[in-house]
Length: 140
Image 1: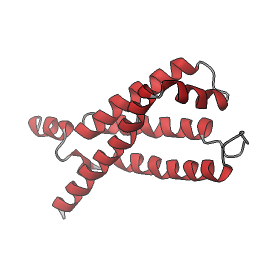
Image 2: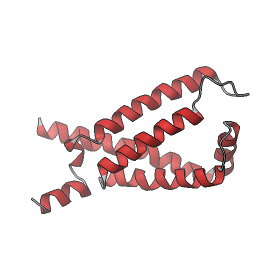
Image 3: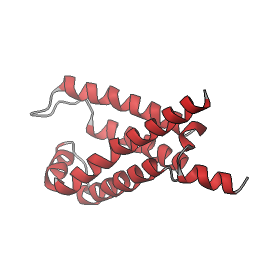
Image 4: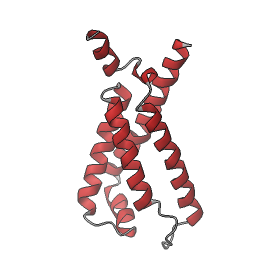
């Protein structure tokens, strides 16, 4: 059972890392489009928040993949996902060119991502094959 727990923990951690890493990279390559989407939702200080978001997504995604600062990174992403949900997937508002059904789907999907991140922040199986796991072994 320990092997299955470790395999699931590592796989989940890796996939959640990719879930944030890839969009972070696409925000770099599609900066103007990402900024326009944020502006459409009425965000202020868009360049600042967009740069912060892409840094957190790229850096945090790499942290999760490597298994470095898993708990803190997972909790940061859970909070960030909640903020993005409220601001960017606000299905209760109508925006020209955006589907309410699609935004509702994204909102609910992000709740599931948040749930996975919260579980990851408490799960020791996610430390297998990780920087955090190796550090814990050295200190025990």
